[in-house]
Image 1 (cartoon, helix red, strand yellow):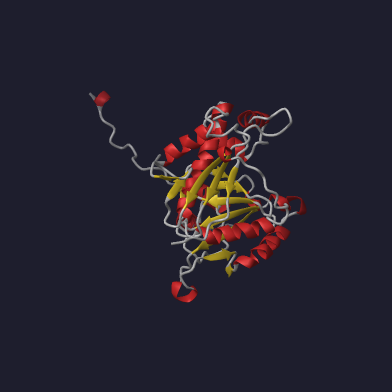
Image 2 (cartoon, helix red, strand yellow):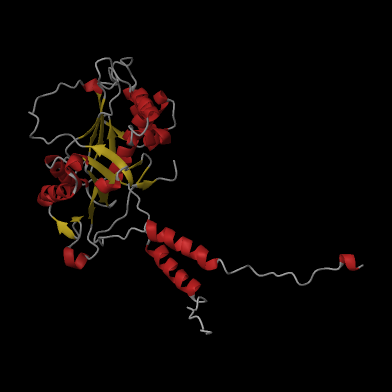
Length: 194
Length: 153
């Protein structure tokens, strides 16, 4: 008995598939979770307000006012970010040579103080420069490129090689502390305004 | 001479029979990789540019805070606001929000929660510093200032 086999017309299948494809193409957003990673200090109440003596020479002060102007170590700053990075690097790696600069990398602190009126753009710009200075020092010590270093440091436990490079870059003292900690202090913003 | 006779009947069409397969393959790829955005963002979002970007390894352990001027100025005013999930929240409610986000995670992961701050370039530092202080109190101290790759330099 000859029976005609029912068939779905498949000529339009490609069209339907294209339609769906276009829909997903347009709605897809590539998730970009990229940015400047930062660890905040513990809450202000948790630690007793002890006066930690930080010598003036171990502090690299960067201040930004409400009109996004920079004050680096007390002097107005008009140069590029590149020069700021180099200045921070020289400060961190001073090791007591210049009596006005830091004692050693472990004691050096980069202090970043903004005003409440500073824009986020400017703040990120300067924070970027501070992190760049540290990343370049670490990368050079570990013998990798800065891009590689950032990958390693976002997940140091990914592989034994990564861990090794991470420890080499930051340096571990005999007592277990980090030789060059990323000592970035972000102070409470001033309320000067104007 | 017939040896060098040109073939005139070569087919010049691209075979189209496999096209649906190719298209379906693409379709499945995009279906699998698509992640629908759950929240509509009601604040201006122009990301700052930076060079020292890092990627977040665990995407499931990230909560987002959007900070910027509201898109509907006539309704919400010109002051920068904080948006969490789908609503505007006040600075003092940040701790509450963090705790709610933490309770969504597994118990072991709670302290590894990263807060991604998507802050508009024009937002002022004062508000962000207030949010930071609240995050410190809520013990969510790993934060990420979202930024795009700077091309020059």
